[in-house]
Every structure is written in structure tokens, then in C-alpha cells.
Length: 302
DNA sequence: ATCTAATTCAAGG
DNA sequence: CCTTGAATTAGAT
Image 1: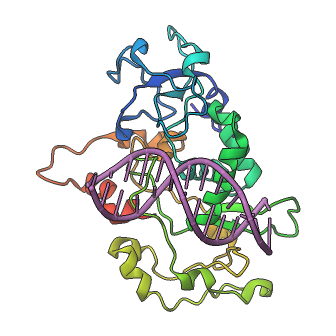
Image 2: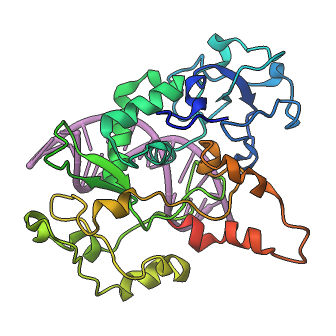
């Protein structure tokens, strides 16, 4: 039950209370969504005693995720596990996933660097440590990945740092339920990045140079390319996103289908669509639903 | 084993 | 704060 008009989704208020644990080696696709009310039993996981703990080796970079404490609403009869031993494990989300979640949950669909940091720390206790390290990684991710777009502050919204938004064509990068590694990056062709360099001061630069896109189309694959129809955005010299106006960056691009592990689901955004969890009635091969969800080039390439 | 995405360190603007 | 690059780690096949 989410409350309208609330700043943050309800689940963010208790997410700092780790009560559920996932076993080592759990396939990403089988992870329950953050706002799931499933119990360990319902997902058929081994008892808590059999979980490995990685929090003790806080600096254990490289040893992979041992366990993950899923932020969850404390429930009746749900014993909360020892947070000192099992909590603070690294969440099974890449920085790109985290950033994406943060931005998408924002009403404005745009956040400053610090707001992103804050959101992550509020939600995941693990990230309240080693801030220097992961925050540097976050910055690197933002600059390096074309799916993130830097939006300069408008004079009416003074402050420090730019805003970060999702590139309108980045698609739903995690609809397949994998938050650790995308199949393909969302890479803009060189021209797109360099496009509209001059329009920077011009303000009215709504004309991003819509030509020259055949090259990258083949590079990204047919499906992805279809996303690139019409208007293409680009980054100017300073890396600011200038090809599209803010409205486009900000619009909430939700998809018609809802996947149990989609970010929308994770964030409780699509609760009314929850029914869509239904699995297609055994279609001979490749139901429309899954074809849509798992279409490699279309959903992963971002 | 390989391919490539993600993470980390870190210099330079 | 932002961008890059090189080197390393690590998912997925």
C-alpha cells in the first residue's frame, strides 16, 4: 500500500532493516523483488543457518557476493536475523542498477550526484561504508555510461552539481531481472555524443541533427535501433545533454508489461500492474509475453 | 576459456 | 564535481 503524495516509496522507510537473506549462488532471476513480502519459506530457500556471511570481510572485494540481505518490511513472526553478522552484505545490484533505480524513483526523474549517493545509502546499509570507493565508482558510471545523461541546472534551480537523468532511449535495461550485468551496454555512436555542440548557448536547440544514424544502427542491432527512430539526443562538448528537452528526459517511461523483477516492481511503482506477473499459459514455444521480456537485443541492449 | 560488462584506482580538468 | 584511462575482477556463455 503506497501512499500518494509521499516523497519516497513506502518501502524505503524500512529497507534499512535487513531481515531476509538470499543464499550464495542464487540466480539473479530468482531473487525476490525488494518489496516482496515473500518469506524464506515461500521461495524455498535453505534455513538461515546455511547462509554464508560476507559482512565480516567488509573489505572483501573480489570474493563476490556471499549473501544479500533484502530490505523488507518486518513482519509478524518474522525473526530478524543478526544484523551484525548477516546485514550489510553487498546488494546484488550493479552501480548502474542502483543509479537507475534512484533516478527512476525520483518524481522528477532527475537527481544530483549527492541525491543519488543519499538514496543508495538510505536504502542499503552496505553502502554506508567505504563511501570514497563506491562513490567514485558511481561517478565513473555516470560519466562512462551513455544511458546516463547530465542535465545542466536551469537558472531557476541553482545549486551544486548537475542533474542526472536516464537517456530516453536507454530502454528498460533490467526488465530481464538481471541487475548485475547487462547483456549489452547502451552506447551512443560518436556522432551522437558530439552532436549539437554549438546549440549549447542557443537555448532553443531542439534540433539535434537527426541525420546520420545508419552506422550505429547496425552496431546496436535491429531492435535497439528501432528505439532510435526520430529524434536522437546528443551530448555537447561539455558532455551536457542537449539533444532533447527536459520534458523528454523526465517523462516516465514505463512499459506495458510488468515483470516480477523489473525495477518498476522493485520499487513498487507498478503495484497496480502486479497482476501482470502472470505467466503465459504454456504456449508451444515462445509466448508473446516472454518473447517480449527476453528479447535480447531489445531489452538488454542498454 | 572467452568475451565483455562492471569495478576500482587515480590522474587531470 | 566531471571525464578518462588503464588494470582488474567477475557474469554469462
